[in-house]
Structures are given as C-alpha cells and as structure tokens.
Image 1: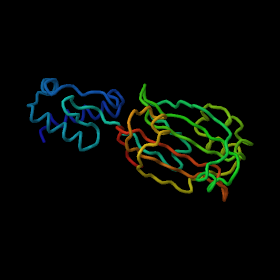
Image 2: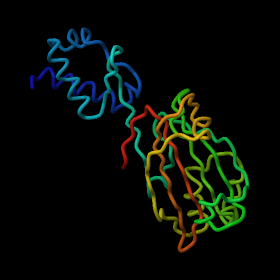
Image 3: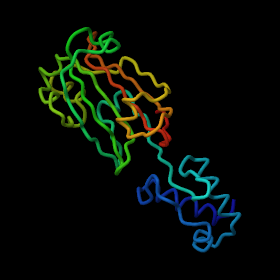
Image 4: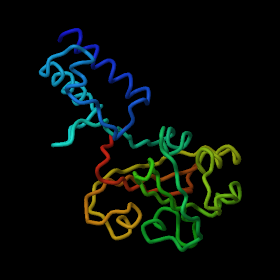
Length: 226
C-alpha cells in the first residue's frame, strides 16, 4: 500500500476516533481527497475500502461515504458503572411510574407492583434506543429518587450498590432481533414496520432479582455486541 494511502487512512481514522468527524457526517469527496493527499482516484478508493473494512465508514449509493455509527451494546459491569449513553449521546427520561409487573417481568421480579422507568437515548434529533427498566420496589428504600423521571448518576444500579453496600450483578443478558411492535414504533419515531435489535438484562443482588431492563435499538444504526 502506498505511503500516501496509509497517511490518508491514518488521518481520517484519527479524525473519527478523536470525534472531529462524527457518526453520520460525510467524508470529503473523492476529488478533495485526491488533491489533499496527492492520490489517484483508484488510490482513494483503496483507502476508503480499508476504512470500510475496519467498520469506520459506510458507503451510501448515490450519496457518498459517511462515518459509521459504531455504537456498541454495553453489558455487564461496564453498563452498571458507566451508564447506557456514550460520547455525543443524551438520555431523555420520559417517565417513572409504579405499575403492576407484566407477566414476563413478574417471572423475574415476582408478582405485584414495580417501578417502570422509560427513556430514550438520542444523538441530536435521532432516537438511537428506547429503553425500559422494571425495578423492584425494595430499591426505592435506598434510591428514593428512582420514582422520579430523572437520570441516576451514572445508573440506578450503581447508586443502589453504593448506598446499600450490596453488589449488583448482571445474572443474564440476551440479544435478539424482532419485528417492531406498535410500542417500538411510537418510542423510536418509526413510521413503518421494521426489524430491531433487542437486549434484555436481569440485575441481581445476591439471590434477589432487583431489576429487568430492555433496550430496543433503532434500525439504520449499526451496532456491535461487546
């Protein structure tokens, strides 16, 4: 590979990794890259192919090349201790309500009342993920603010762990694809039926399940399972 191609790839990679080029932004045109790096068009195409192979960019037919959304599904302790939003993203808490646990949630938390927290993860105006957490009422003894529709810093699990002294673990996690429900489409702002990726996590302290989480990832945003 010619050195100038290597420099082009390194330059664009550094701009993406450093956040100067953000997910969804368009790369300069082939002509611009040819002038900037003194490359032929074929050399630029080779460099772009390398960036695509590394998952850094995506080509869109008739539009150009854009920085890929490389959002990952964060799981386990990293999820508990660092939250669900990543760099450049914001969390919009919609509600926190006491409800009767749905059957599939009651199978983990036990029957009766629980707290359901609803939120979305956004990047600008785009909704990347719609999430719900069903939380055991005992958590409110240590984290009373969980009844309020506001974020816990960094997560309600981490706050509970810190205040109670009990370790919180992820007992299980599943990732599956499904066709959107009407609730999914409303939460993600989708007009048509589509396939979405769903992650469910079960949070425990000792032998007690204290929470069940479900995140639905919007189509069109490539994700990697970490």
